[in-house]
Length: 297
Ligand SMILES: O[C@H]1[C@H](O)[C@@H](O)[C@H](O)[C@@H](O)[C@H]1O
Ligand SMILES: [Fe+2]
Ligand SMILES: [Fe+2]
Image (tube, rainbow, N blue to C red; front, side, top):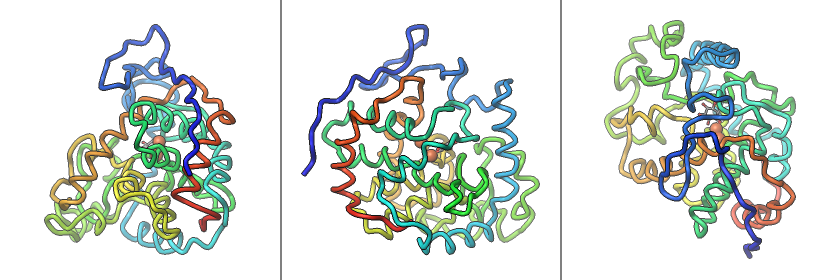
């Protein structure tokens, strides 16, 4: 049974922010640091760290690496815990790839979920999708092998075919070994027209890992929810419409939900802190519905 509790007021932004009305949700123009969202080329100390992050990420994400990680982490033999325990575990991590947020991750999960819940009150699967979408960042934790940030966070992209120019800090792919491999550096590479994203290897990180966790533990989230979890960092696809030639019919349907979700994932990032204890009962009831019991990670 889903428990209904009164939803705390979710306020986004502060008065001096310029705002644009976009559907029910008011997306601010400017992030908490006074820059535009995803401004990867602004001059700032934080941005230097982000750029260095993408340099290592783009050099090291290769077909071989992705295959190895999917196999190893797909076995889910490391930890058993509930979804909520994982949310709490994430509290200690700050994402080095993110120019828009330096709050602990649990706040980002709840900010996203509460914002989307306000505009889509009846889509409870979407609220839960928002809550879990970044849980794969537990790969940073010692119990998960303490993977480096470049192997966990940041935007994702296909490997095994040419790296699209719309990917942030694209120039660093020059040092990626796959970029020189003729089997991997053409438009289609190892794929074919309309083959479906399920058949495409995506750079390894928190998205694909959390998708594997949800699927293997037989979560009852709908296909659109699993798709959002799996591809929410794939900005070249959902923001720049790149790699369309690899999509099939089902992907085209699911991308519609992903685009909706992205607005909340990105623009809900703010300094407005959610009262965790107040919203916890609601999310526990959703976890119980879509991810009952202990989960294998
Ligand atoms: O920096 C961010 C962050 O790591 C997000 O969790 C991810 O989904 C984004 O795509 C990425 O660029
Ligand atoms: Fe993410
Ligand atoms: Fe996120």
